[in-house]
Structure formats: C-alpha cells, structure tokens
Image 1: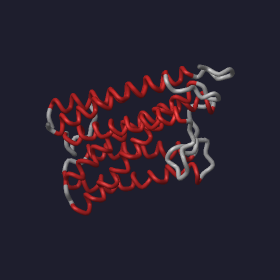
Image 2: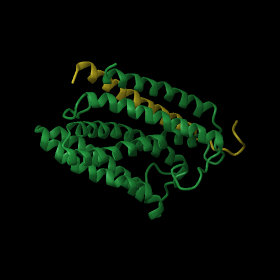
Image 3: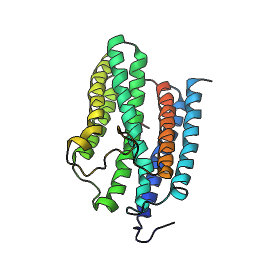
Image 4: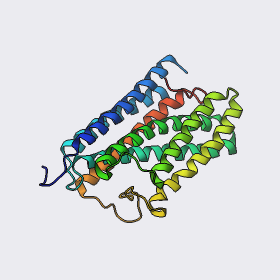
Length: 39
Length: 219
C-alpha cells in the first residue's frame, strides 16, 4: 500500500533491479561458459 | 562432486534465492513513505556493497597468506575473489546512482564514500589487468599480492568514511555497533538479501577458483 504523499520513484528501483539481474546473470553465464571450456 | 559442479550448484541456488529476494522486496516489503519505491534499491545495493567488500577484504587476506607461505592456492583464491568482487562492484556502482538521482537529485557526487569506492573499483580493475599482463606465475602472484593488500586496506577506511567526513551517503543501518535501525519487515528482506549475495559470492568464487589464477580476463 502506498501512503498518501509517497513519491512515485519505483521506476528507478525497477531499473536498478534489472541492471543488477543482468550483471549477475551475465557473470554467471560467463563463468559457466569458461568452465565448460576447461581451465 | 567436483569443485566446478559444486560452484555451479551454489551459484544456481544463489540465483533462485535472488528471485525470491526480488519477489519479497517488490511485493512483500512495505514502501518507505519519504523515499517511495526507490528505497527498495537498498535491498540490492547494500548486499552488493557487502559482497564487494567481503571479496576485496578476502583478496587482502589471501594475498598476505600467499606472501607468507608461497602457496599457489592463496594466489588462485585472491585472483578469483578479485574478479568476483569487481562484478559485485559493478552492481553496487550502478544501483547507487539510480537511488541517488530521485533522493539526492543527482546521479553522483564526489564525496568521500563515493569517491573512495570508485577508486577501489578502479584499483581492482588495475589488479585484474596486472594479472593479465604478467606471464611469469611467480612474479604475477607477488606483484598482485602487494596490490591486493593495498586494495583491501581501503575496505575498513571506506566503511568509516561516513563517520570521518561530511558526506551525503547514509550511515550504516546494520553494520554498526548499535542495533539495526530498520523496521522488522524491511530488516528481514535486507538480511535475506545479504545471505543471498553471500551465497552468490561463494558460488562465483568456487567456479572462478577452478579456472586458475593466470587467466583473469572476462569473456
């Protein structure tokens, strides 16, 4: 529930969550791919 | 189960927990009245900062142990932790400005906390470049251990910058001597996110450790 007067800044949170997910998933994928090629 | 498989399983567990953190933070954690939705960035930004500092702190510890014992496993761990810490630092340094813009009215300010954190990030980018540039294993391990120790020495300083300098950055709300200053629902989400990011750190480092200490380039 949004209290009266609460600023609508949720768009910034969604952007931050997407960027964090892209970085963490991307790095997971990179490690997976490098691991599959062997040391 | 090999170390690589173990690392992948832990990483997968961390990613599943991250989905739960997102669901809990977005739909099951109250909206802060003054900041609005942007406050929820906090549940990603602060744990990412924690994982970054944990990773870089452990680089310093492993580097000291390497210089004392000359055991290659410490060098290998330091290389892994530095790369993983740099990935978490990317999360920290992108989510922070997204919070700052609606709350402070600016994406970035050159205050002590932000500037020293950016410096730490560049220092560890340099660390990774140094490792990639030296082919002789012994020299690479020695030089990067020295740089890793200097980098890790910045970690407690960065934590204290909000007390030592006049800064816009909020003071710690969990990692401080007194009790956490956060309502129960928000604190539970934050602590769950701390756990998730720590598990992700362990999963990433375990996988990266398996790749060895010489190959530090991403891609």
